[in-house]
Image (cartoon, rainbow, N blue to C red; front, side):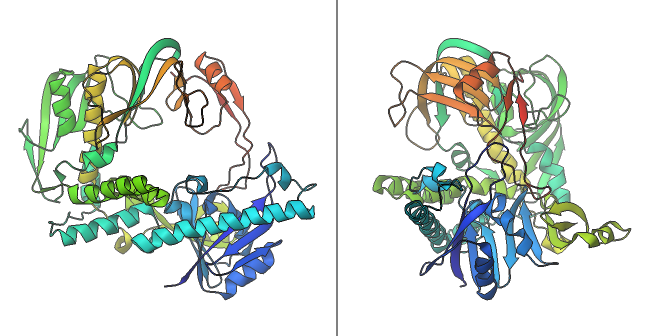
Length: 536
């Protein structure tokens, strides 16, 4: 196998309005550590040696400082706006975040005062020695993480890819009937039944109340212990059929069912409770939960869909659940992180849509006009550094459809489980995928086992400004692991202080000016300032 190496760059500290620039590069291949004050000799070394080189979060940061050093007409892989893979000479550069989506500190990271990285301080010999030691340790820790992942799971580009490979091995070893791969027609037929997690604000503003937050232990892995559709063959029946896997129906829902359509927010779905009759595409899990809780009325089942075969992922989940418990007990941080990620990465792979992916090459900017001519294979996908980004859909032979019905059933189980908890609990304030904030829990089972609920903390004040935008203050005596007072916060897309979150919850607007610039594959690095206000 090709040698594994890592690189990292130390830059100017993050500061509002300043695009940081690297002043020191580190390289480590497991045998030799190299350090460069300028990127040119590093780039030359990479050109001449056949490495697979990882940078942590490189696709959103480090790689952007190397775009000038790429060669025209090279392939480049982009996933959700992140540079996943690019090439410099003989070396292939990959973003390690795609296989280990954790901060380096989740494993090990030394501490340093980043103020020392300012240009008027970093050239002091004693300071430079500290910075050099810090950079070297980051490279060493990253190499340990990446090497451990590859040794355990093989050389995979992403965590879902590694998870699918592990599932295939278990599937074969256990002599399970394989889950059918499908096609675009099948995907388009069942994509309407596939949704994400339930995120919902039941109250908003400043709320003074005694409440608690409860989480499901590994909600999606627990769902995977159930039986789910696994075949590409299915039977459609008009009207209601007991035991079907999916239902298309019309009804008035009291908050039980997911809906994607008018009124759906940026998270893609709502859970109507406005008395309006709608058409819903739901799993049997959600249908049964709605009937059990008497949360739907005026029901007309239009169509029932029953699959020919079903499967469970018990062998897969139990393997990694056991590995995680052993790793946690023995202090194996990486083993615990890997097992957690592998348990949660598989279900989404079944629902992936190849139509969302493209092939890319980089071309000189002055040749970009040729990309948009009638009949051209590629189209203009914007700019990436000094290059025009040429984009074309995956060829048909590259498109791989797994089984979106499997993924839809798994996610539907978790939403149904959460709905039953919502319905039975008293004064629910907020829910998010696998957690509930309420004044008194209902039909939930507390415990440490897979699928049990755990108490995350007791709180006495909430400030809710919207989905993924809240602050919960711990009740008296509630502490974090470091002894500080417990707060639970979320401010997706921004780093708001506690005071700013309280202001937003009160209905005031907070102007957010980030310290960290945004590095995009479609435009030059810059700062995205935002006006953050209450949304519910």
